[in-house]
Amino acid sequence: MTAQDKKILITGGAGFIGQRLTRALLRQGARVRVLDSFSPQIHLTDVLPTDLASHVELIKADVRDRDAMRRALTGVDTVVHLAAETGTGQSMYEIERYFSVNVQATATLLDLLQNDDCGQSLSSVVVASSRAVYGEGAYQCATHGMVFPEQRSRTRMSQGQFEPVCTHCGSAVSLLATPELAPFRPMSMYGLTKQVQEQAVLLFAQTRGINGFALRYQNVYGPGQSLKNPYTGILAVFSNLARQNQPIDIYEDGLESRDFVYIDDVVEATTRSIHYAGRFVGALNVGSGVATNVLTVAQAVKAFFSSESTIGVTGAFRMGDIRHNMADVSKLEQVLGFVPAVPFQQGLANFLGWAAEQAPEDKAAYERSVSELAGRGLMGKAAIQ
Ligand SMILES: NC(=O)c1ccc[n+]([C@@H]2O[C@H](COP(=O)([O-])OP(=O)(O)OC[C@H]3O[C@@H](n4cnc5c(N)ncnc54)[C@H](O)[C@@H]3O)[C@@H](O)[C@H]2O)c1
Image (cartoon, rainbow, N blue to C red; front, side):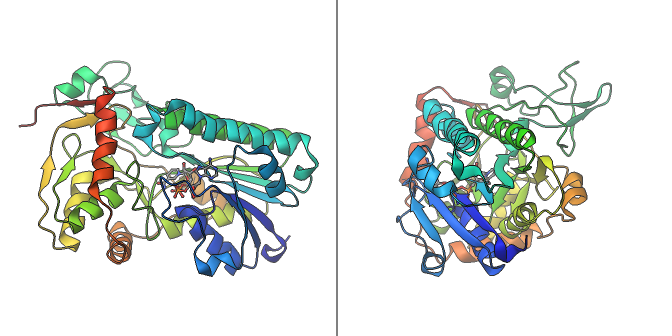
């Protein structure tokens, strides 16, 4: 089947990754249907941008709405399931909502595909998984080789000891790129929902004999990401604060790191999964393979805007956060013949140039998101020298 013959459903297609993916697929000639509820936590309006609106069939509905999902699935050959609640910290107290949207809705989707006529033409399912399924991910211990540390303890973090330790001997460990064969060890409810979501989709694909891709996106960034959602995206949070010359407070000691992967690279990996000509059921990391620490990110954002913001390393920490992450992308290259290539400095400049043209968000929403966590005992603070 050529790209032009494809009929693709994208749940969450009005979101950051969804919109960019939709544009790419339309350019390739595919027919795209989007189902999205335009969650007010993310969106300022409930309409698609004009360049998409006239080319996309839009179903404005919740992924948990079985009848709407039946209509959305009818006649499609590929489902890209992106709709989700995405805030790691928020997931630690909005537990029922996260499981309902991320897990229950996936069960509804698969149940329809299995039991209803609407799933008959299906040949592939792509689901957005996350780095969060690994928790701390892979580290090297001098004695025990590759290890996968447990959740960091509140006691150690309160003493300013933020680095994970070897699970077996408690010794210091050094960061490794995490491969897909690392065990599931989510440290947030969000990560747990992503684990169940990807396992359910892959189990379904395997049983049904169709392609199934669980794309474990790392920290995706770029133009178009929500500046409104205070629960996700440190680049969005930092750029909002820097543009308003507000203090930028960084968690822990600022040396925690993330694997930032640019939106165009994520879209390329996702379209390659959609058009994959062979047979594949499994998970793939989609990341840059590079760890960048948060202090470096804050300084770069501040410099870009020539901002007068102060950068404070506070020692505060959130339960559910991981210390570092860096993806091993060799399987991505092996399966899809592609590795993300946009350097962080270039991608960051693209993102910040775009953000500079958007209305800045009021920092009150961000402050509220922090106090929600603190009020529920999900934050702590270490004394920082
Ligand atoms: N952006 C990242 O860094 C990142 C990293 C790892 C995984 N992911 C995953 O990728 C997917 C897309 O992420 P994104 O960054 O585009 O997020 P986003 O928040 O920009 O988009 C999510 C979309 O889903 C929609 N949605 C939310 N709840 C819904 C519901 N109940 N019914 C219908 N639609 C609903 C929202 O309105 C939004 O348009 C998510 O599954 C997320 O977990 C993203």
